[in-house]
Length: 126
Image 1 (cartoon, helix red, strand yellow):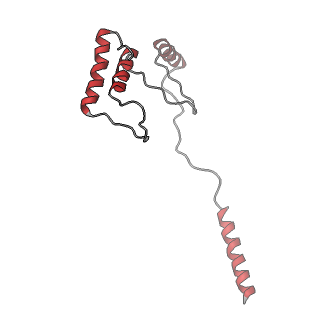
Image 2 (tube, helix red, strand yellow; image 1 turned 90 degrees about the vertical axis):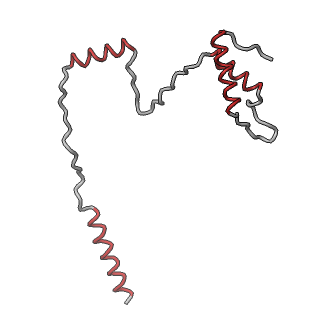
Image 3 (cartoon, helix red, strand yellow; image 1 turned 135 degrees about the vertical axis):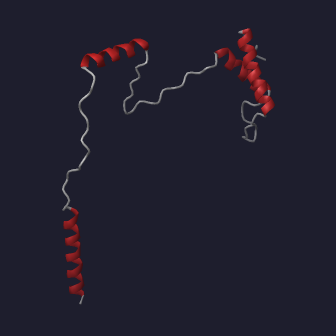
């Protein structure tokens, strides 16, 4: 009885292994359009224009995403930081908790930054 089970199991395993290799090793991909409507000179001209304008961005597989440019000046950032420090929003308390600014405090921080831009002078350190 045991020999019949072993033989049957072996035959099923061999048939299953044989069918795993029965598929052909090629894949069917849709035909890619390899022809371009632009000439080599057109492509080179576009490349030169993009390089001149500074709009050419090249990424490789390992390139990080481009960092967005800040719309705030250094003076504005420093003024907003000092206002947040004055309000006690920067840093960690003894319990390791952060304090979140209220809407009024956020408005005060933003106003400090805008004042710094208009006066072009950052607030003096305390």
